[in-house]
Length: 407
Image (cartoon, rainbow, N blue to C red; front, side, top):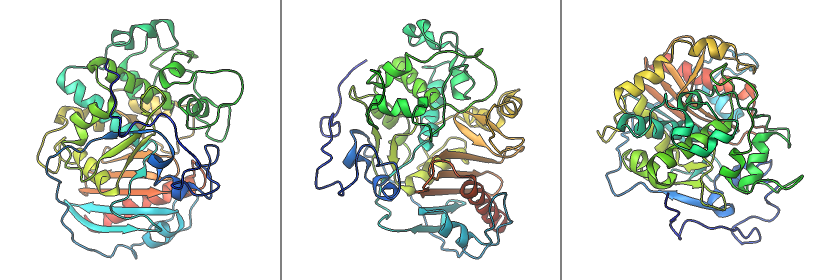
């Protein structure tokens, strides 16, 4: 694998005293209030990043059909008492939101200092982008989801991932021990951030790179069991993609996805000291390019530019799931609050039917895709807490209400 990186975008160190960084924001508090709104829109100013190029192709057109959606009534959701779409957008720390219906923009609205040209941290919406790269590599034959991880990265034979398959990573069904408790500073999800330089190291000596950290993870249960949400699964998928192609993810994602999407701006991804990406939650992009990505799942894998990025077979597999995807989701040890739902190919399905799928990230990042209504909605936010059901589910219900109103 080539270690070459674009020197203009890879910065191994960051000067936290730079004039670009507001006073008081540090490596220890950039992901906490009151800094979230600024830091989520300035990741490239505070952390090392690499560019995911949009290439030189045409920008996919987003014609406008302005529509007032603010007064649409939203049925009360568990944990919420909101009455209209406007109430929910106001009460969920929205930085920007957008709705695309039948290819036309009904609403595009920004708050604070965010605007159409702004790049925003996507958090775990990044997982769905990586999942799409795996899909493209599956379509091309570079990756076989049924193969063990060791077929691509042999050293994993000596780790907790020995015996796991690519498919099990895609659906988060390995047996790896990994806590996703964002409020526990000792949880693996936070130790991963320490390893890649997103947080100050605490405790005893530990790995200082993404891949070094992944090699330390242990197995706690048989691979292929219940769904359990673990960010490390996506990071391992990134490693598999890089090993299968001999390319770093920024270039790989550009070639397989971003440069074909009709994106209007480059994306970026946070990287560790070796230039390895923060695959599970480190991608930054603009709101308009999020709906362009979502359009792939309404158009059989075809971008708004008309270019085929994913095959209909991969899109259908994502929506149909596996024979036991819903049973595995129901058996999850976590409370996902999506009865009858499933998780497939790094996408969430909140309902028993296959019409609605979500790309979700902590602190309120979302792409909502509704096939029956031909709707894509995207929302970027700065929730104070990483996870907040009183904000997540009212947002989903608001988009459901919009879909019902315009169908």
